[in-house]
Amino acid sequence: MASWTKRKVKGVLLDISGVLFESGAGVPIDGSVEAVQRLKAAGLSVRFCTNETTMTRGMLTEKLHRLGFSMIEQEIFPPIPAICKVLQKRNLRPHLLINPKVAPDFDGVDTSDPNCVILGDATTEFNYHNLNKAFQALVAMKEPVLFSLGMGRFYREQGELLLDVGPFTKALEFAADIKAEVVGKPSQTFFTSVLEDMEVGADNVVMVGDDIVSDVGGAQSCGMLGIQVRTGKFRPQDESHLSVKPDAFADNLLAAVDLIIEASK
Amino acid sequence: MASWTKRKVKGVLLDISGVLFESGAGVPIDGSVEAVQRLKAAGLSVRFCTNETTMTRGMLTEKLHRLGFSMIEQEIFPPIPAICKVLQKRNLRPHLLINPKVAPDFDGVDTSDPNCVILGDATTEFNYHNLNKAFQALVAMKEPVLFSLGMGRFYREQGELLLDVGPFTKALEFAADIKAEVVGKPSQTFFTSVLEDMEVGADNVVMVGDDIVSDVGGAQSCGMLGIQVRTGKFRPQDESHLSVKPDAFADNLLAAVDLIIEASK
Image 1 (tube, rainbow over the protein chains, first blue to last red):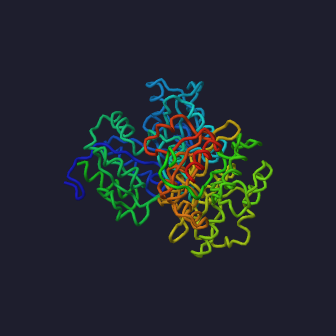
Image 2: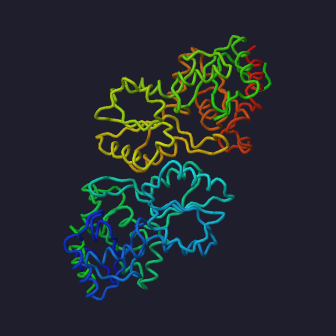
Image 3: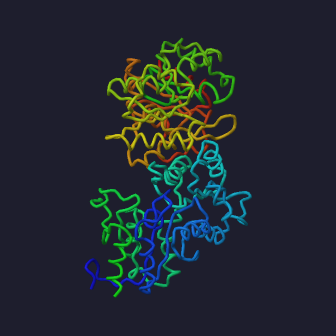
């Protein structure tokens, strides 16, 4: 039996930014390419679970290939393909406030006479004009529906802390007096859709991430194990977090993989 | 005894935008000039209590004079003079995210090496760059302090709903995991400072406003009476508001003054 868990691990969810590479950097985190190869060689089911909404899934796959990773596009789960399924299922037509780079992922989506608003990580598109337009679209709806692609507070890019989508979602929630539906980590619906694709029960899956609340806490709430790596947005105070206790800490993905392989035997 | 209250009214607080004039309009609301004159002629103490932070107090006074009102500048209480007193008292140096038009009201305020952030109704200055700068300033502080000049959700200007300062405060609160201090309505500290200037007890003061939560609810929480006018941002659903029950409704300020004078005798 492994030293850190009694469970047998059969599937692995990996966060991307902060685990495979540092945001904004052009190189993988040391050992992370080898780490992914070892998981696959051990016969484990692997999926990549990200709140990335500044690149299309295709762009993200290309970037990962350039860095030396070899996953296929269908193993990567960002929020946009998930929200597109929700739109179709619930017959919703969105007003979009997103990064222009991911607009192609919404090609063919009907945006006329919108009955919901979708916020992604729009970065510089988060300006007064666009936020007013999104707010006006919401209050014009009989039953306002607001989707947030993830709920991150901020991220670090090239040494600078930048606001993520979460704060802007909070702004519109307050203005329109509504509650947003989160599509992305740590939403249970989102994690469940990835587990269904893996065909492995939550009990036998471990999530590896750098965000103690969204990655580790979110996965644990769904019944999975959670390992936090000390890369990306990890901060020393995470090790004494008040509400989330990871099943294990690891210096980086390669060290996490040692723990995972130990628990897969 | 008046029909709507058993109390004797000696002092009156008036909201400005939506009560004296409609936001963005160039004319006073019908009867509002006469209404203010009647309050003064009846010997009542009158103060103007506003969350306006897109004009200096001087600009606001000039605008009101142009519209035919005759109050003096010292009778008008916007948040900026109040926050300037707080800065001095607590030895704080602000990072400002405000409307460039009110910058003169902060002349002489030390903004070097900031140890607090102040958000006003910055309108188009609320962009990704400036919000990141305010966030970065907050997280760089040992003990982050965030002030919000009012906490309005939105206002109506020339037929369009526009986001007020409140939503942006919520965004930074979430990003930096802190709670803002509100300077302006409905903060009790703010109302109390106006009551002290009037030298009338809260029991004998009535607030007239168009915002059921910030004006009427705020005043009632401080022990004052609250009358809501059916002008400005009033909406029919305010008459069945879940938590705030105004002491009276009035079609406009002139009708409110009838009620007030009745209760002053």
